Image: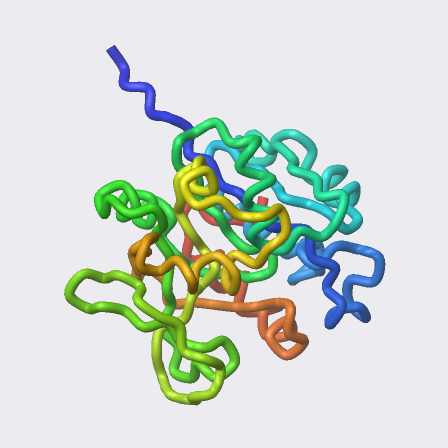
Amino acid sequence: MSLILPMIEAIVLAGGEGKRLRAVVRDLPKPMANIAGRPFLWWLMTRLSLQGIGRVILSVGYKAEAIQEYFGNEFRGMEVSYSIETEALGTGGGIKLALGYAKQPEVLVLNGDTYTDADLLGLLSAFRSSGTDLAVSVTWLENVARYGAVAIDEETNRLIGFVEKQSSSAGYINAGVYCLGREIFLKFPVADKFSFERDFMPPRLEALKPYAFKGGRAFIDIGVPEDYECAQTLIPAFAESLQPPVGS
């Protein structure tokens, strides 16, 4: 008898306008910004498919129809569903709304404007084995000034604090990739509009006991013009390291 594994689900927060990239995206959502001839979201979704994700919930808002028309209900073997915001809800509100469409007890969450080489299956495994309510992928940078650093208990790998965007030293940053339980907001009630990074995590660190998963080395935020330019060559280069090769 063959073993049927449960489908792995991911939420991608893809509702941003991209105001700092207005000259590039014009009337498109930020995740549809052109990277080496394809929308950024194509590169991200392709990476998800190559890591074994079976179902993606795209959290969309601004110009949602552009994303819906491009990806439809299936992409590279993944089922695609949509969680549509009628007003901006913040990252936390977007996650909360999208979780209503989830079918699995745990869900991966990614930002639709950052690209990272985080091992998603490793993150999922760490979440399951750690007994925590939240696992956070962290990435080492030589200069954390633009993002702020995270403080980690090295004995337990628990994320225990956030450092403001001041120091230009090296350290780990929150890569914006998470694994969490589908019912996390039932256990930790919240409003409908909030920032997951600012409003939800910091005041609940003691209760959440987030697991810091050190699985990523590459990190690109296309929302910043200079990084957007770098992404034109870096993202295709990262993609080439995946098997099977992307490009189809």
